[in-house]
Image (cartoon, rainbow, N blue to C red; front, top):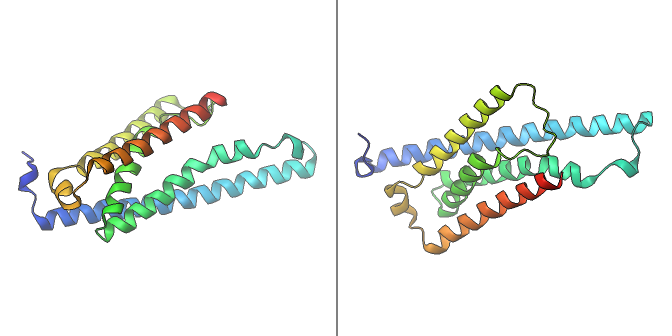
Length: 178
């Protein structure tokens, strides 16, 4: 049976480093995927402009930003969280909590209403696995030894809550406006 007091300092450090490395890898992969996706998207728009099937008046910068901003923001935040958690800094732990809770919940809200998904079962399974993984990390980061090490104040918890609520609200509003 797992008991938070049974965790040694060495085990805590190991778990912390694994989570930090996970955030670094996810952030780098997310950034790479975002750059490739944005590059392909811009290539499609460029070809459509050259052929005349698309005009500058019909391109919405808002839709382009809406489609890619969360991927870049979460990737940057994940890289930041991983780097600072690796160094044992409190800000890294706080951002790790924000990223893990956001990543565990945000992907359930599609980018737009016309979300073309070929296989809904695979999509739901992938989102469930993603949510389970990130929410597990969120709860692991809140065990007593981590809270004792980083000594969060009520201000810290309010900060985490506000960031997550703003991100959920923003993504919900963008979904409803699509």
